[in-house]
Image 1 (cartoon, rainbow, N blue to C red):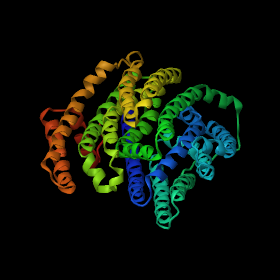
Image 2: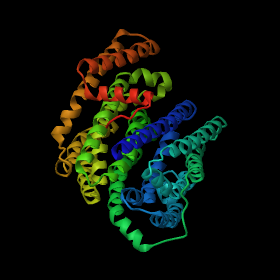
Image 3: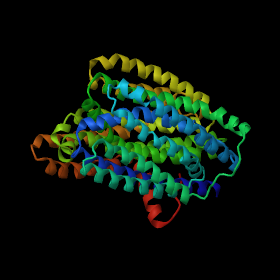
Image 4: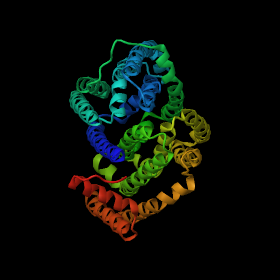
Length: 486
């Protein structure tokens, strides 16, 4: 009975999280495409530079304490209240530091006009600090429906504001206001709709216990985020803002698909695994199911997007954005393997091994930084290829501990997903051949998309792929209102 309830919560939570992510990110993508036709690529490059600083600051907002609240089986309101008041004070200090150091960051980019931009965008750090504990509460109790309304509400409001300001000639400030208003409205709606409210309580003892687990995740997140943002910083500093804009926009297309699915699985899987952390077999079962299902969904999307990249970019972006295409193809290949990273790392976190999580991050960042330092002198394309190489190496690193922790090693994982990946990219190769017919972009896509879907589904059925049957049965059970076994 308990297992059935867990399955029901996981499935319901995943669907609500998926609707929320695709709804919100879909609106954001549409707005970004609209703004790309109105604003110069250099403006997007400038915002990307500022977001390097803001994104790193955002990591400190969580401090790993949000994950610690989710992972702790007996976390109560006193734990949540302690983290809430700590976050408020900590974010106030962070924003003060950011406010006074903003001229230093602006001068580093040789653009003093970025100073007010950094200060205003920095307000997102404050809003995130307010909503962080509420998000942890929602995740721990698997009430993901709350995320749907808060995120979508903030995104739609911000989208309208950004587009209106862009057409009124506000330039970069349209992008700034869009970002800040999104986080602000999201926070307000979440605060109103979530029942949890802090009590006037703070305990250094409880904070210390939570921080003992969370600090390792904080350092891990800093290493991961710092490495990702370092790539953007190097491109923006060594090359041009337009180069950074092209790379950033290329990343937006595949990440829209993979990040939304991956985040949905990640957000739901971690609290679910944490609830059964004393049963390694259950953790392995969840890890395997999440990995196989997400690869089955993501791999054909990435292969299809890569095959149709020229047509898609040409249709929805002005000709000046053409350099996006080769970066997009490389990133699609890299994102295909993201489910391996997510599923394995969630298992490690859920089992309470934040120490192991940190060790893996240190090893991966040493490898990634070495590849980045070698490639950065040879152009943006070399940097993109180094990211791809790093992705393959990190697969092995991330799976290594789970051979011992849950008896699910790299070779067994490859055996589970390689057939799906081969099918997906084989389908992508056939779809790409349509490009040689010389049709215009619209006609090409009208052939490529249904052809790719048909090939993938028919082959999955012919080869009796287990993930296809699982998803089909799950859809039938949802429609029929029945429970599906995990």
